[in-house]
Amino acid sequence: MSQLSYVAVLVFVLLGSGWLEVVLRTRVYARWRRLLLSVVPVMAVFIVWDLYAIASGHWDFDPERTTGVVFPGGLPLDEVLFFAIVPVAGVLTLEAVRSVKRWEIGDEPPGSVQDGVRTEDPDEERP
Amino acid sequence: MSYTQLAVLGVVAVVVLDLWVFRTRLVRRRAFWTAYAIVVFFQLVTNGLLTGFGIVRYDGDQIIGSSSPVEGPPPFLGDGRIAFAPVEDLLFGFAMVVLTLVLWVWWGRRGVQRTPYSGPPRVRMPGQAE
Image (cartoon, rainbow over all chains, first blue to last red):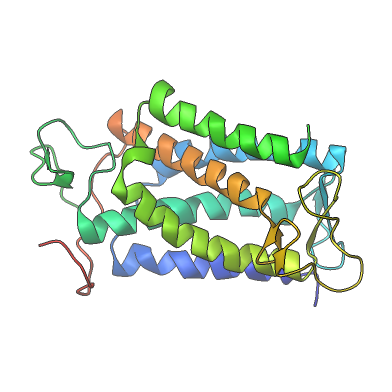
């Protein structure tokens, strides 16, 4: 075990979800502005939660298995990266399901969904 | 508040946001539950690594189960744990994923990079829609 243990788990998540962008054409990283607008508020909320949990002693981190870069409040860099990488993996997964199944997720314009499946969208922008 | 209370509150909060504030209604969609099933499987694996190896350790006064032991891993199953991790982590993860996807759908609905849509896959996938 080393100080890169936590980071190794994060790399696993990054690689385990990243291939979806290429093979299933999720176009999540390609839509990076929408991704940032979605992930940054989540990071903010969960960093606040984490700081509260650390201050209240809900959990702590093994200094020998985290990078050692710690922000004020005792928040390890590893955790901040977690709150960025895991939400992105979540979006990649949802868009991967939609890539395969064309199931409605809620951002389709009215009239472009039939029985929960996307049919045609006249406004669709072709990449 | 304990971790248990906060985790339950987190789930309630994101469901309220999904159904009544942003009205994205993800928790009523099969696309969401299919994606969540995949996410929760990988959460059990990665969280199991983080907690089983003691990278993250918990105080027994703040969770249903006991404190993470100093020597050796916590139980794989039982004492309020699933795959080494406190059950509360499942609620925490659910809240994080739902909040992210609510925002993703909401921004798309507002016209922020709504398209290009995902797909089609580069390789034929089992169960792929025509």
